[in-house]
Image 1 (cartoon, one colour):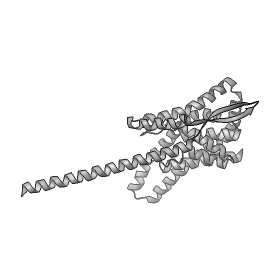
Image 2 (tube, rainbow, N blue to C red; image 1 turned 30 degrees about the horizontal axis):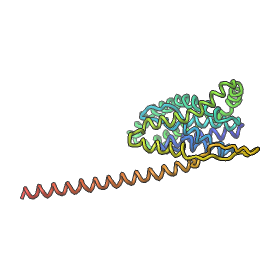
Image 3 (cartoon, rainbow, N blue to C red; image 1 turned 45 degrees about the vertical axis):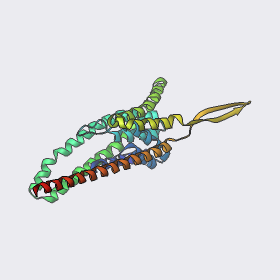
Image 4 (tube, rainbow, N blue to C red; image 1 turned 135 degrees about the vertical axis):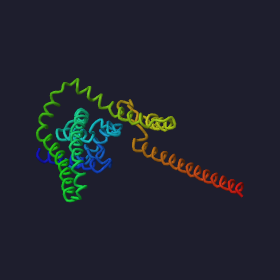
Length: 284
């Protein structure tokens, strides 16, 4: 358990390092949970959990000063408990969502502490005391990283048994409800993303992707017994293949828009030249 706690603490600090330096998107679940699974010796489970958690938080973005939830903390802790305890995806989701909301409170506190140091930074700049400025910057940065490392370490060391007891004590009907919710949450994540990006001109592409996934299937033979052939629908195109087709369509659209923009700029430039020549004629 000590090794697992150290690994989770390191991954949390590693993810928050990317949050500190800018929007690299490397703290998103699809990357950081896969990285966590690799370090915990469960790379396949990490990739699966990362992809599922990414779908849930896909439309969860920070706009301005508003941070709806800390998806990094929620995803890491939810996936960590699921991998360490050998639980399923439903348990990871059940833990990730509330932990992400609690993580927002901690992140807000950390931002308040960092912001409170701004007057001291300004004083060091006015006094041209660059050594003190550098020292204070390193103190706040490593304090930030150490806080999140200790959080990840202590949560796994202290909370694993409690979480295991909680998951074991959950009644069957609640676990079935969690299973249903786990299949609905990815759709909600996609819906949140579409709400921000939706335009009438994009509607045909949305329904094209739906049609490729829903209509292109065949009847796969799964069993033949006593002359009776049992079949089930099986998709011809996988999600990866559909995504590849979508990438090609997106590339064609972007190239067409670039050509139109170039034509528009060329037309505007030609119009400007004609206007200049007309003004010169009248001036002469």
